Image (cartoon, rainbow, N blue to C red; front, side, top):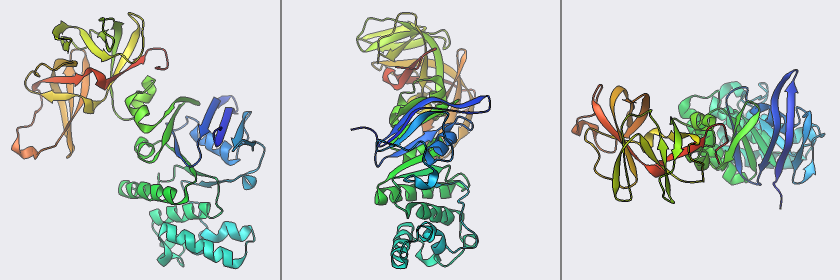
Length: 383
């Protein structure tokens, strides 16, 4: 059984500039799939090709095995929700939602029934008689979603749908979008440059950069196992430490030679070693002296004033606090370690005023389990 939505080898240019290059993407039926990337990476172009607003120079678009590449937008089983809502200002909420069925000349009783169903779904019955100028931004977005869903499309495209909303409203709308998806069960393609939105809403995420897909996977796969420097840096915060592979003779772990962190302590196989070698999880075979980058997320690193007790399969380094930012639930530290400055997050699990916090210019120890870093192969694409 094939994928429900397929973009096959899509290439598109604007003049001399290639915005999407030989891109293949598959969406499963009923999933929430996010296209994530910076402005200009090609994600909105892919969405417009799927919607039928653009015809690709090369490649095909298939829905449930049917080639729809040449079909106009109004003949595709696809609807789009835009960033600016695109509601008709002179129509009421009810009339905006009903618009697609009115154009399709459906019976009045059916239109009334379906509009009531949508108003129930978006919980806006009490605002049905208002015009868009009389309701909030979040309510407008819900009306736009209801208008797109009333024709029962097989695929809903959401183009930066929350970009115009403030932070608290975006967070609430993400929950509402998730609830709406659970109710209707159709496939959602969500286009965004916001990592938090994509990670919290999606079953799978595709990260785009310069017209190409860098990596596709679940949010956890993208975050924990980035396959390129771009993905590691774009998805959340990370520390990137250049090194070279140095075999240490174990099946589970390998060594990384680096002169960037000064003196390193690591524990393995009942041995505590000191030098310039890190201990890293061996998730694949790599040749000796292969150049790699260790991606180490800030929340994976423990920070303390005292040298850490001996801990099997851990690394430890010593550094000096250069800067710190108190963020309520955690403190973010920037710690100078050798030639690197590492970002560390200390979560506040206990009442902070009961302890003396680590502060600026203090000497500290940083430690992490060898499994908590992920190796990116320099000049390659991860695995």
